[in-house]
Length: 235
DNA sequence: AACCAGGACGTGA
DNA sequence: TCACGTCATGGT
Image (cartoon, rainbow, N blue to C red; front, side, top):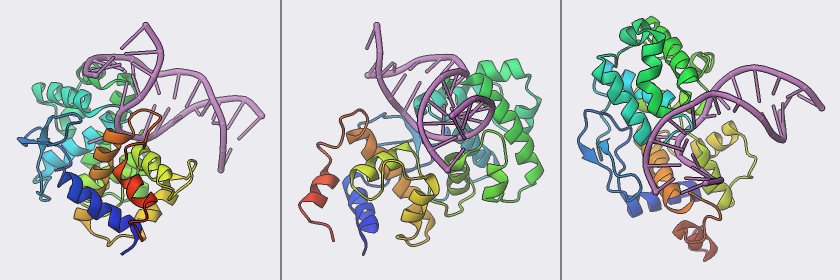
């Protein structure tokens, strides 16, 4: 087993299943010390269970851009209060109303526009699964958001790379600080079975691990993974 | 009271 | 391609 896969198993043993992607309707609590909020479904990979939940994941993926999840949750609850947690209502909502609802998530001018564009796109999908390129073609959807939507909303095994992933694995010595998104993505995908659960769980575990040891610099000093590698317990 | 969070886009080298 | 600046709220 290669190091990337080993680290996955180590993180899973350390933290257990993370229950991503969080949904308003799920009661599960993340056992983590970092941001104990609701919406998780530990060890349950059957979500989203319907089209409404699928759309909620997509909207959350946009809203969480450079924003912490608790802020996103507030925005989602506001939308739910407006009965607007579905593509048609997002499309029909007046722009100012939409902006006000998602304000807690920040960047509300940009994100309101992004949600409008995505809602239109989602309606036109008519139940089909979008391709990665189609998503990337939308204004407001970049690499990470596209992969998050595919992996957690549409259950397509696309590995999600975020700032934490780069930070942690650069520090561990697997990639350079300036590694590109697709390069990092390939590192994981080429060293893991193409398995939905593993992709979903690994990304969530990286976030959890990073929140504990890589939130503010200097980071990594107490990283048990780094220590394990340095003491050559790997390979 | 700065600093930062589960990024993406526009611009000018 | 690449390095920056911009976008914005609220928690710590």
